[in-house]
Amino acid sequence: MRVLVWLLLLLLVSGQAFSENEKAKEMAGKAFKDFQANYKKGDMGKILKKTKKRLNELDDEKFYSTPSKAVDKTEPAKKSRNYTMAISSSIPPQVLRTYIQQAKKEKVNLRFILRGFVEGISAIKPTINFYISFALKPEKSLADSDSLYPVEMDIDPVRFRNIKKVPALISGKCVVYGDAMLSALIERADNGMCDIVIGATYPVIEQNALQEIQKRAENIPESLFKRLVAQKEKELQNLPGADLLPPASRNATKKIHMSYELPFDVPDPKTGNTMYPAGYSYNPLDYLAPFQIEIFLINGSRKSEVEWTRRAIDKGMIDDQTVIAVLGGNYFTISEKFQRPVFSGISLLDFCSGTPCLIRKGKEENVLTIKTWKVDDDL
Image 1 (cartoon, one colour):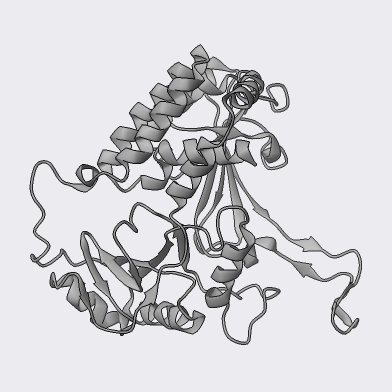
Image 2 (cartoon, one colour; image 1 turned 90 degrees about the vertical axis):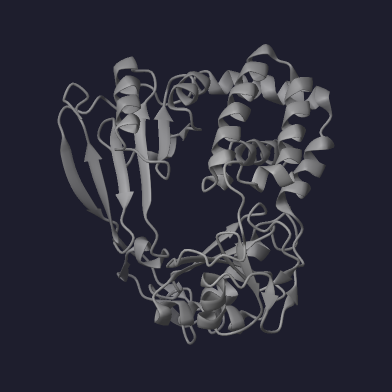
């Protein structure tokens, strides 16, 4: 668990959670380079010290200021169709479900954020259960393909800064509080009527995720950390799967329909009656919320493929939201070249016949699109 805490800590500090903030991106790049340099030298003391410094900087007033121009929160905000609402598990699920329905009526994109994990970082299940409590459509069950409203919820303690009560609608630097009609909250935010309360509010009961991670990280004995880091470094210098997929021989696109047929009856656990008979066919993608997913799989041991991918990133073919997965190669070398974290691609072998390979699920699609490129060809 301690290793996972540190990995999550480093992921947060590397800027993945703060991609909307340009200053955070700049800080993320420096933090990532500092980590790599000290990691390779085996200087655990510097890693601990600098990581703590980064976390403290994230709570620094200067981090949120705009150096070129002071922000006047009384000025009307630029009208947007994208809004963030800070919430907590103290809010009744029906209130949040109403906001989802109102967002659809107003034709705006509404994203929920929590300050931290429900009941703490030790278990993810309470957070998932909280999400289901308001995202599950009335008279639907999780077994139904369209059971959940398409609403996003993130753990975002940075955007949550200084918010002590919820719900709180965030538009730029303007915050409007209260359980009121979404249209009323939006109208006030768009007209610069910030920091006002126009309805009932609830307490924020989740711990700050960054503070919780920092507290746990400080309790890791340095001797244990050194040993675990040495073991992990050895694994990361030689990622698995280098010989498992050949280079793609041509540019090609195919679609995979993820249908599955049950080979046996599935009983209802309450009644014992058959809930899904043998032969029942379903598509797992029907049960995912309608978000876009893109994973780009490459072979990190092939230099020409790594360079091709670098050019694809430079040209915008691979954006910041695309996950890069790697078979073989050195994690540190590849992530430094791409200036972003990469992940093991060993679980993706069944989707691609060669590399590089893009695995994509569109926002409203229930099929996977698989695309391969021959690296000799121009992008």
